[in-house]
Image 1 (cartoon, rainbow, N blue to C red):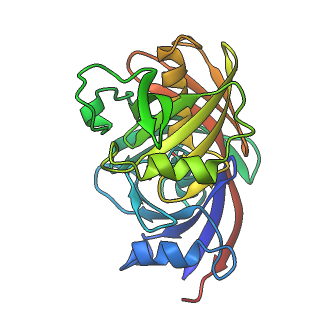
Image 2 (image 1 turned 180 degrees about the vertical axis):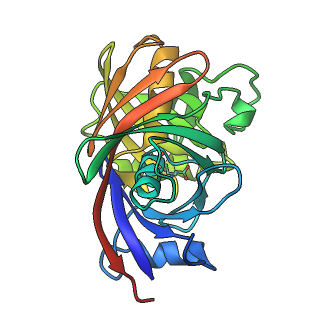
Length: 278
Ligand SMILES: N[C@H](CCC[C@H](N)C(=O)O)C(=O)O
């Protein structure tokens, strides 16, 4: 099975062209091929599929086989793949996702690395739409919850997929493999949750680590960076209608939170192509 390995800020996926092949059980394939020792290695797989209402459709599966409803780093790479492989040779592309059709503007920086700006759509703040099971109509902002006897102040945001954002003075010392699953598997989050840990540097710069549902700690999370900037604005650390730099383990994303949409700008890079025997 032919594949293309690509990444956005080190959030790496195995991309499969489903204009040319059909994958019957992507949830099984993701678990096998994502393994860094017995497979290709990645944070999951992304299927690039034909669709009527857009240039292509993206289906993304985490390492555990669960299907993500949106993936910010992957959609930039899908746009690059669609352009490079002449599926749609346009600098403005429309990619369909389980969270609707997104518009991506590509800028070719060099032959292997592109920069893309994605209109990620509006941030969803109503708790029942994130979803988070708390009887509140208003957005959860700096909302205290108790997990295993400890209190955490959470801000919850959906970018088409669920996010829980927390703020710390120092994120370098957080033990994500211990704390991440506590949120990922908590009954408060019926569809599980991606959890972002934020350290604010100034009004235009934040640092982020992330524990992704279904994949664990990744080097970057595009939807998570968007949710983190929305949460930073809601908590008064950053401003709307301003480019905020999100510094991640694998690189940087620039996020702008406006009344209508959240915009994300970042890299998309191809690493190699190959044939997977399975
Ligand atoms: N783990 C996420 C999907 C991947 C999101 C992340 N890699 C991104 O770049 O947005 C979920 O299940 O909601």
